Length: 271
Image (tube, rainbow, N blue to C red; front, side):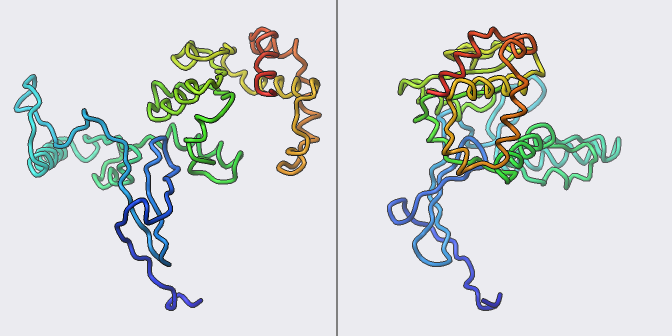
């Protein structure tokens, strides 16, 4: 079809029962949306997480130490702009530093300061590299988070959602309430580790050795799903050979995790 022949997308507003429900996969809030049945239509349904404590208006202090009081958006933006202009006039553009998040996009760069950064520098960039290696794409999740609550066992490596991603922690709580088990590998005794059924407290930097050792045990104890491996993976013979060098006693020495705990984790996942 020629570009001129393509029907333009039309954004409409609808209700959930008139469209196909979908979710945004880009963060743990997984905001709800919907696709309309008509060709070329994108429907939107409001299903965003909310809280009674959520701010509905900007807050401003009359002076340092004064209590926060509601103000209009015009007052808030005028105050911010005036302070930025004052700092730039006195000390140059780099006197203003901006740290943005997912919700700001690249708007922070319009302040003409070199001191601008976002959470992508230390968070999203590493996630993108891992997702590319694992799933062939650098953004989003491989499935809806609601699937988490139905999992029999969850193996979490280095994560502490209770402190870093509370909406995701809600799905973990649902999984626990449904009788699911959780394994956490982390040098720290985090909230997630304390709430786990099994905490593998490994030496920092040895997570790959732990993974290789666990796969070694899965191979030797006959816990692999060979049909799945043949249908869904490639290069597994080379992996099987590689993990052969990570026998249990060696992995225990490398990671500091007692061998009985490693075996227990593998059997929980294998079952």
